[in-house]
Image (cartoon, rainbow, N blue to C red; front, side):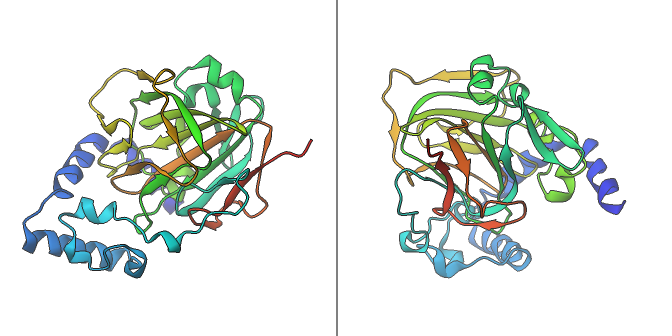
Length: 283
């Protein structure tokens, strides 16, 4: 009951105002204040600095630079089989299973519409209607860059404005249709294993999302914005960075029924960038 009450409080919080303040605070560069903020943050959220390219937390210009720190390549080896899709982030599995007749499972007692998730794009809804999905949660202590599960050619991107509910487990368990209500960015790719969508879901305190081809994605838009790239030949390789959160949030990976989720990708499992996420179905 306590978790439910706390989750319901998010209905009345000024999501965007709080996130705007975080955006500003995360970019303070005055060393005494910046270092105090980073120290306070890491006291609450222990970070494995030995995995970072720059191991000195105070060497980062701002809290945001620290959030989006690069990792040493050897810390995240990629699954050996090039046909397997890899996990695009560090984090934990919120849910991972089949999409059933256009419905995606969120938590016990809650599911939501695939069509709503992709911003009403009927073509994407048709492609992934009975496919597979994995919802991956990034906590504040996790690595915040997002990498490609497979080599893919970018076809289009769609920014969808929305709420900024927290994506912490206790909130996901109690807020209906949360991922289809929050601000998000749907990136659609063609891969050798079939269509793939990476959906970056915003959340409270996620002060911005960005992709390597577009840069910072403005959250000021009030309507859905679509960006076409089918003629631009933007190809990102398996394991290559495709974007980042400027604080923790959630990534949803969509695949067709030609892929199957790895046996280790189960609810609440801890995952690392580069481990096997999905494999092609053997015909």
